[in-house]
Length: 220
Image (cartoon, rainbow, N blue to C red; front, side, top):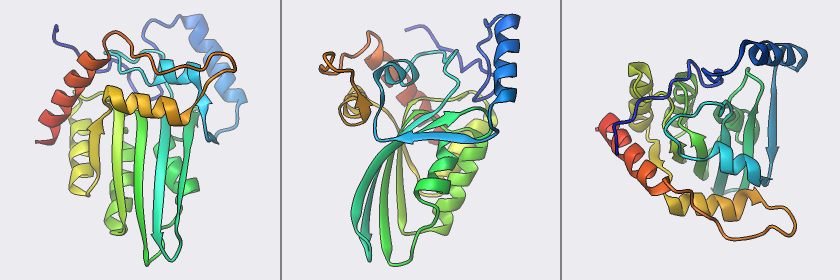
């Protein structure tokens, strides 16, 4: 496979480089009319969003949101298993930050938290710093993050933030085809009459191996 380049987006919620000026102005106007902070949450996301947002493509043009599916097992004074998904909405918040603001605002002493995220892309610098800070503060929290693709992985500050996550105890992996299938089965709402098994896209295995190699190089 030819050598791939890093994500060309200027920021996590950046515009598609090929987006026309008219479309950009329309999106800016829409953003100005929307509330400054909102996070969409639920138990299952639409199949269309999964197929588009989670696809482990080379370039993520147009994929300007982050989708985060989570499984949280709690053991101790309080026990239980919880799952759901969070979706960025607008430009003022990211799903990773929203998880710690809404789903797990505090880790209680005497309780162990085993959390697994399935995220459409790896975190930006700010989100990585927030995650690392939470993990350092709460030794009873174990977090595994599986990402569909790496966000702007060629940028030195992004690489440094991923290494800080590892140092803080976060276990990060690239989503394999089996992980995508798990999300499809457990977090995707399929339309009535269209239920069916997960159908891998053509380059899913190739892109998985590519991103896995890049992540290993960054974290070594």
